[in-house]
Image 1 (cartoon, helix red, strand yellow):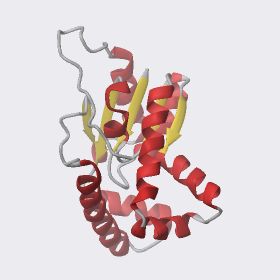
Image 2: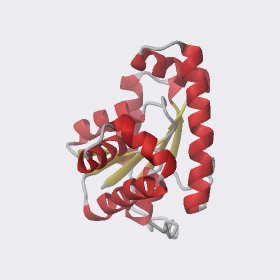
Image 3: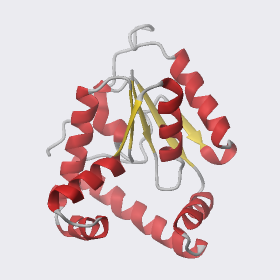
Image 4: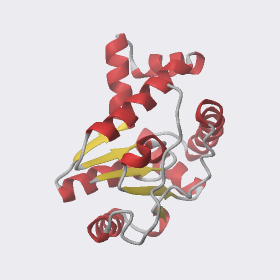
Length: 192
């Protein structure tokens, strides 16, 4: 089974993906892992690669291509990134979208990155706007379109263990598409 966990910064996707993979005995691959590998291959730091990505769309496209290849080539995997659900497309069995109000996400990010909440909120808002524009430009993805996801959750309502139980229950109760006569959702054709 391939499970994707997607959502904006601070939604809890990395925490849930790691915990869910551990619970199910699956591998866990994050977009962050792939981004770090890209930085290593180029011999640059993560900060440098982020700066380069602002000017070179091929970096984002390489990351997304690798997400798609990982989804295609792996099973018993939890794949996590903002676009994991979109990039995995028809290869994903269960697609989860996590979110929380901006103030909650900003507090989480501020705690994680040891910065003021107001700064984290402003950066998070600006980052989300920038990413939404790039996703639309690159792939014609409307990131606010949650129709591709099997389960969307406001993570502000559950603690870490509650989220794990919710996701694990969904994975255990999963029935392959077609059990109800529903046509599978296919992905979008992406130009990498």
